[in-house]
Length: 402
Image 1 (spheres, helix red, strand yellow):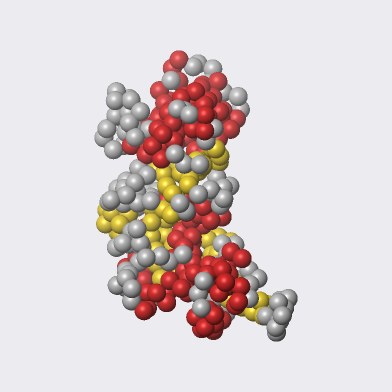
Image 2: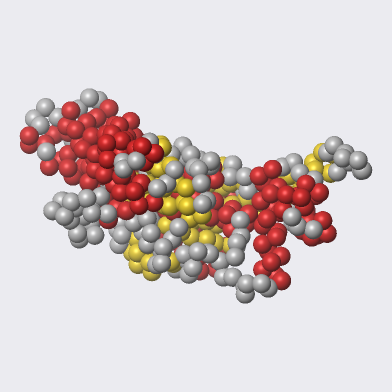
């Protein structure tokens, strides 16, 4: 689906915008290129390419570099992206913290900023904290740099078309008019999406998914969600709720989930779930150092105990890995992605989560190729959502489609 208000299909302005994105993306992917190279690659006419390049040079999206080799006539001037002028801000709004990055059009991170959210955060407090992070990044922007836009990755349900956070479950907030408020304050292009989808897009551009035609990013933190990329395009579903795998039912009589149902995947493998399961087993594990830990436990407490050799913590993570494996089998058999990427805070325990999960996939995959589906950890790590938010802007700039 599109995240922009589109002009009527077939209109001159729309076609020009499409051609402009095509030229710009060709330069991004294959620079240095001559104008003739671009015309040949895109099958656009040389005059069309010439006019578009002229605009892109004037707006400093691209720049001329060295002189290329001659193919019989005058030596051509080569073109590449200009990474020095335009920049983007990406925000990752979680339930406890807002993190931000300032990036070039090539996705290179120039600066970072971070602010905690207040306890029992209100809508206005969330927006003010997001403004603070944005302002900190703008202060670090060079005077001669131009802000191309602000991308926002928000946990929970998001209306992408309207730019509204419909429901942020871990904050208990509804109907936050994020895009409108940011556009009023900063007068720039603003795009918002669910955090897992943004992470999936970021991985497909700059992380583990760069060479994969289809991938699923699973974000495991306080909640569990997924971003689905098929044929290099994000998938949204009919009502923007695709990827809510945290509420995939693993067992009908399982533990209570925050959604009010029982047996959801999230109730087994999220950070709070791992902490709750460990805490419920402390009476039967007298030697566990977690018994003396301040309560309630956190997922990080359990992981720290595992790193110190605690048998209970290891058993809890192994069991979570098995439950994750069941979910992965369901995803593989439903979507058949070539790649699955694990991200989010709980994925830091990937060394203990992945082996039992992969074992389940190998045992229960229907075909040999399904059993061998590549499953990896995110390389973007704690910046995955904020870089993904930047990528929302970059995809709109470089890959506009009908």
